[in-house]
Amino acid sequence: MIDQSPPTIQQQMKDRVFSFKSFLTVLEIIDEKRNPQGMEIFVRSTQAKIFIEAFCFELVLKIFYLLDKNTNHPTNHELDQIFNDLNEESKLIIQQEFENKIKRPSLDFSKKLGEEIYVPDFDETLLQAKEIIINFKYDAKLSNGSIINKSFLKEMSKKIDEKIESKIKI
Image (cartoon, rainbow, N blue to C red):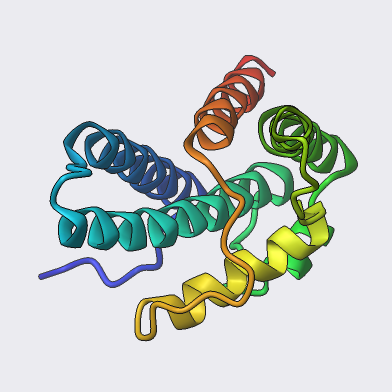
């Protein structure tokens, strides 16, 4: 007989962290295997990468939610609401890494180009990621592109590990 009891918070945490790190590995493979000469493959892998990055960002928020609240995370894609429900410390960690790994490098690149590049703020990025997760898998069109990147996600992976480690020590 199969156990029908709902998963514990710890099991949910393990599952979400496993999924997140698995998708992060997929992003690494996509970057290694992209073939700029075969434009069709390049476009398809870019579309997949955009979706996976947005989905990983959602998983990051839900993992922090589980760590902060020790209760089930919302099962929707309302990333702004999930983020707003996080503890202040977690919000600060995520926003600082957004600034360090996404916003600042984008603005620096803009200066090097000598042209102004639009870089969405954090709140807009939450909404873009939600839009991508909900719509992109069916219709690969973006209103403003995506700013989430692998560098940010890799740093978030480290921060999740640190937060889990600190919870275990307590």
